[in-house]
Length: 211
Image (cartoon, rainbow, N blue to C red; front, side, top):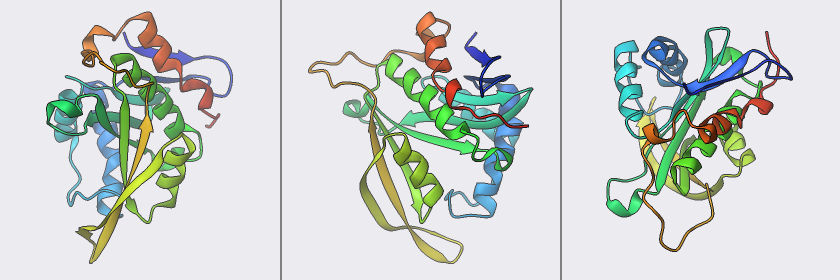
């Protein structure tokens, strides 16, 4: 359930699906270098597999957490979370994407985002927001290439590796605004539907061939 793969075209043998607990170790390994060697993540210690499992399971109670996989190897992941805790924020989400160091420039980030945004729109979310520590031209380029637009910069908001850092925030509309929107639907109510499988497949054409 919730798995979509491709056997033709540039994304041959690749798939985009919901994360499971079995992915926690690979996801943790992809994320760790962003914590230990860069200012990309503001965490100071990389989470292990057990903590990443907790985060995945917690996210999937409400929001999608997707992985791009090829022949059992996770190439990258993307997920959504709440933008705020107050009721009026319920139609907006924060999103993140991380790609394995050996899978850059293969379209993995763009593919994951395309599928994630389609899934979020299916649930009834209207706005996606993404933050990026600056400078980070790769992240800025990715987000703006998929339609995000800069809406503000938090000046000197984080201190890491001996310096203060800015964080830029970008916005992407996920669907046309409704005057009286229904609350977003639960993830479980859409997973496995035909519309869900179509959403997951949205990113597959963006994957480029790689070993």
